[in-house]
Image (cartoon, rainbow, N blue to C red; front, side, top):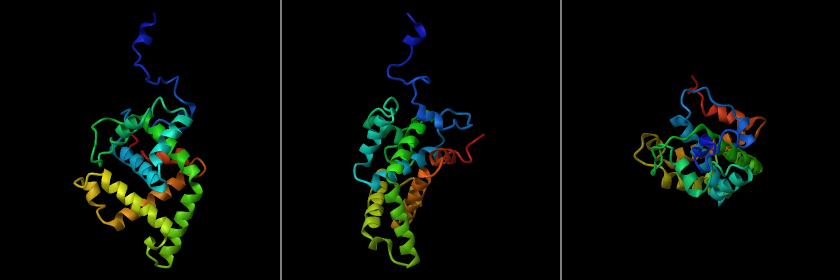
Length: 208
């Protein structure tokens, strides 16, 4: 009997069994094998924007986990919730680390969903630019207004209003600005080497 094999946790993905798509993202040059605070926060926010873009966004995350052979990491709804609750701004913040492997899986999923939504993201950003140039309130466009309204609702219901990072985003105008910035990040993910560039940006200032 192989003793080392028997000590491997059941359903725990080994390095050899990891999907090749994760190899496209380099390991960050940080001492810890877990993600810094800012990285955890940004990944959760980008997923929040995806959920605001389309109904059933959370289901899409799980569906893409299956299609991309990442179910060994993003196993189910509870597992996904635990990973996202590592964001310190969450109401239900869990003091658990987010591993580099888990972060890679979430970024890959987010970027693949963003690619599927490229046309929608481009249209919303174009509408936003045109309305700002004409000084027309953003809520006067139904599609953009729906996205912003859903994002604000998601953010307010899931984030802890007593956290300093959330206190700075109490107004609808600030949340709308964040939602638009996240659309820009999602579009960035769809470009040439966008997934890799977005991944690296998550560790800006953290690399040792």
